Amino acid sequence: MKQIKLTKKQELVLNYIKEYTAEHGFPPAVREIAKGVGLNSPSSVHSHIKRLERDGFIKKTNSKFRTLEVVGINEFKVNNTEAVKLKLFTKNNYVSTDKTFDFPASRIPKNEEIFSVLLDDNLKEFKKNDILIITKPKNLIIGDSILVFTDRLDIITVTEKNQVFKDNVKIIGKIIELSRNI
Image (cartoon, rainbow, N blue to C red):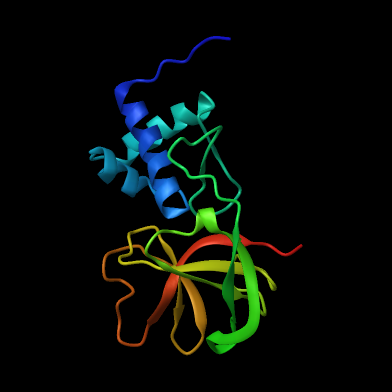
C-alpha cells in the first residue's frame, strides 16, 4: 500500500480537526479551521479538506451540521464510551419534560452547557420526533445553525455578525447534532 505524504498545511488542517473534535465533541467549521491554522481564505481550507477526504484521512457525514469526521484513530481523543443523560425539552414553547436523552459523554463540548430538544412537529428541514442537541456557546460564528425563540421556536443560520442579536429574538443555543428517530 502506498504511503500518502501530506504537506505541512494539510497536516496542520488534519491535526486541527482532530484536536478541535476531541476538545469540543464535534468538528470545527471551515472558518474555525482557517482561523486555527492561520489561513485567510476559506477556499484554501476547502481545498485542503477535499484532498484529506480524497486521501481517506477524513470523510463527510450526512449531517447538515459540522459534517467532517476523522477516519481511523484520533490520537487527541480520550476514549470514553459512557453516556450522559441530557435534559430533554419539547419544541412547543420550549418546555422541560421529565424525559432524558442518552448522549455519548465523549461528544460533549468542554465548558459548554448542553441539552436536547424533541421536535413535536416539522421545523424547516427537521422532522417530528427529531432530537436536536444544543449547546450554549460563548460566541457564534457565521454559518452556525441556531435555535431561537421569538413568538415561537425557529431555526436560523447566522449569516452576518450581530444578525441574531435583536430585541425580540431569544437565542436558545447552537445546534451541534441531530438524532433522527426512525
